[in-house]
Structures are given as C-alpha cells and as structure tokens.
Amino acid sequence: MSFKDKFDKYFRDSYFQKYGDRIASAAGTVVSIKIKEKSYLFFHRLVVDMIIKPEAGKAVLKAKYVKNRWFKKVDFIPVKVGHKVMLMGLKGIKGKKDADVLTLQNILNLTTKKDLVPIDHSQIKKSRQQAGRMRY
Image 1 (cartoon, one colour):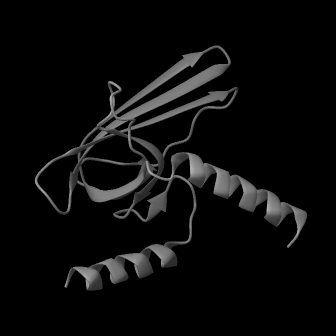
Image 2 (spheres, rainbow, N blue to C red; image 1 turned 90 degrees about the vertical axis):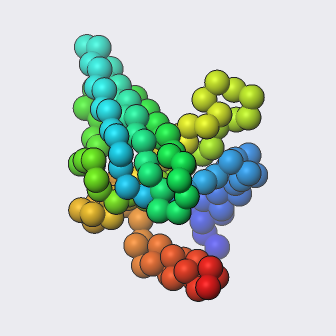
Image 3 (spheres, one colour; image 1 turned 180 degrees about the vertical axis):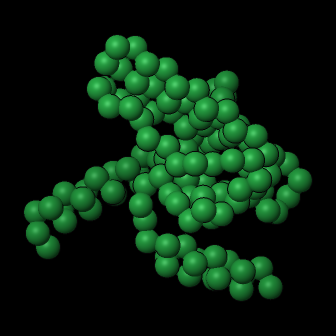
C-alpha cells in the first residue's frame, strides 16, 4: 500500500466514522427544482433546492445542494422537472430545523446520463440489481 492509498483510506474511514449513520441515497423523479446563483465580486455561490418523488412510497423528499467557490463560476449538471435522478448525500441532524432535508453531495441524472461528481456507473447497476433481487 502506497502512502497515497493509506492517506485515502484514513480519510475514508474517518468520514464514515463521523457521518456513517447519516449517509443516505434516494432515487426518483424531479417534481420541482429551484436554482439560485449569487456572485459577489470574486465569490460565487450556488444553491439548488429540489423536491423528488421517490420510486417507492407516496411521500416526497426535499434535497438541497450548496456550493461556494472563489474566482470561478460553480458548475452544475442540467436537471429539469420530470428527469429521473439518483441522489447521494447526508440526512439532516434530528432536532435541527432542516432535519428532513437531504444535503446533497452527488447527483446522477439517469435521463441524460450525467453526474455531478464522476463515478463508476457499473457499481450502481450491480447494487440496483441486487436490491431488486432482495425485494422479491
């Protein structure tokens, strides 16, 4: 194991130890999306509020993506109402005001086959197939 691999493993383990019980993912159809971009001289801020109708269940899911960046404009993938998406992020802390809002870290647009942070899509297909088998 190289130094870089050990470093990555350490950060991965510490992140999972800190946020392991709050990590969540959801998939469904976009019902509403609101994108707010603010620019203050050299500082750019992007806030995206989404409401998702999950594939399973009747309830809706609120999700929020916030990104701040200096000098460069913040990039975001095209997402429209009606697109199928998969969300990955952290659930809110119980007792706080935004406890029911999912704080997004990655969004996969399954309709346009684009993702915010590039990942290996073959792993997602395998996990979805296994989850489907477990339901039956």
